[in-house]
Image (tube, rainbow over all chains, first blue to last red; front, side, top):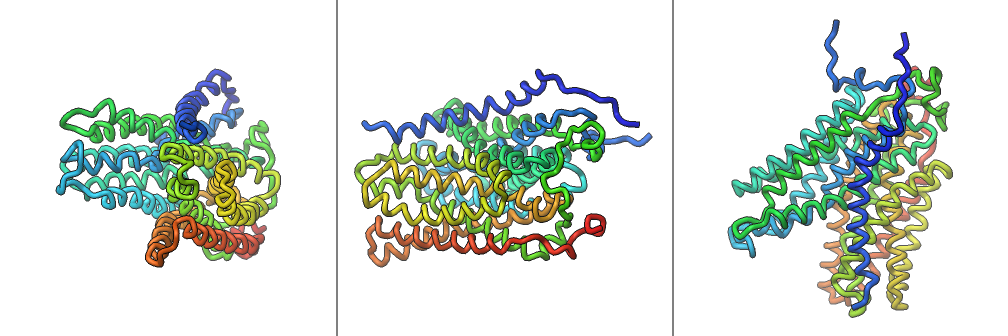
Length: 42
Length: 450
């Protein structure tokens, strides 16, 4: 007998993406700030 | 009633109607963690000052000794991916990801004990061997699951996960730096508590992936349409043992080896190269910014090129990496001659995007050639090319530099020869890729052949 159909709430989907997305964006932002040094002339 | 472990393959099969977009975050949780390995260099200097704290003492470990820890981890990544690939296919991704989390997290803890006791062999056993096994298992474990969930967009799916590996270094580096700063005192460099904290954080973060990962139901496409139709429905299936008997596997091995060797060689020289070619225009801090920019392009390339391969095909995209890549390597000295920093940066950034793209496209390429039945195991075996390139790339560059230095060649001229050799390597990869054709049906499993 097939398992009853279970839909995933959009909230759970957003939460899952936030768990990995927030650290990733933080890391990219840090690297981007470091990279800016290339374009800043002192 | 049989007791089923939560980690078993049968227990991780998705219920009907499961949203496949929950699987990439699970894969990313693993890859963002194990990608920390590429940020290991932030520990190099502090590890050489464990006894002297503010400066190295004669009893402290040397920089070459400490640098070996990263190389050891990469060697064990390749070895464990090759050895445990078939086990992963048998037990499913959840158990393999759990083992990866335990190994990677405990690797940090064992290494912390080794640093406390000032025993380098124990640090090597912890971070290099145990952590390296966690790295290899973690790298391959979500890939075949993603390929099964996204048969219509395999390049995009694996591109997302492998992009996470690139992003892992971007998280690992500032995380380690900030932790060491907060733990540092007059009597400690702060490395030991940083290792303990990171071990615990990464183990917990990877457990999110373990709990979230699901395998698609074999009947999902026909019952509820959860799965989209396969983009190559009539492809034969090849086992891992059979795949290594095909020329296609070895042509792809050469292609990956060449792409990684050239990329690592450029990446390892990026900072001194821009400073020497554009002296005194580019300062040391600007050169560090340049390396950061290359990491961003490496990350973006993993997702973009791999997704692009879903539209133009894997063989064509690899042909672009090698042909366009060789041209870009050959153009680099000219950008130096005309004194254009932006052109030089753009050239290197494009090269790095294709270096990342090569990593991300290979699982989908393997799936096109050998099917999904043991693609994780085949991918694991192919990653020995990465381990080999991890040793050969930096060695090639350092040996070349040594020879040129002995001959008294001017630094900027020396780079020209190096870049010419790297372009030649890419041409070798181009021809190897050209030789990749459909696998002979005699290698297919009996079920898929019929």
